Length: 126
Figure 1: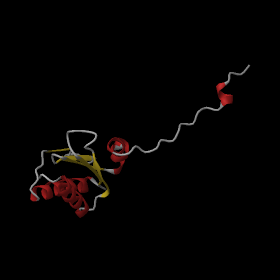
Figure 2: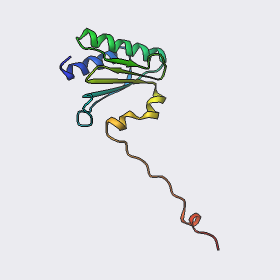
Figure 3: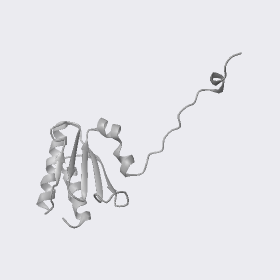
Figure 4: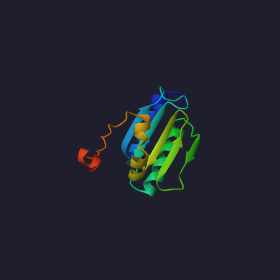
């Protein structure tokens, strides 16, 4: 599929069809030459994860696109669908939180400063 915007719309619709949540899309052309878009979505169960993956693959093929590869379909935590210029990550919420791909591909979340020991704790007692 030549038009990346069309491919992204197909993928987003396929994810919405099977009720994925927290769907985000990132234009990563300025970060890598390997692909143009990354889509991240959450699934509530291993069953939904696999259904979302299959639906994305089916809808991309129906629209004339191709699927280069799929990784993780035999697990219940994370599936990666490589549609060439667009990569889809479908994850369970805990896995998504742990790997935090949004920070890798998007805008980093502000970090809260670590609390330092109080000054009295840092001074040796005489």
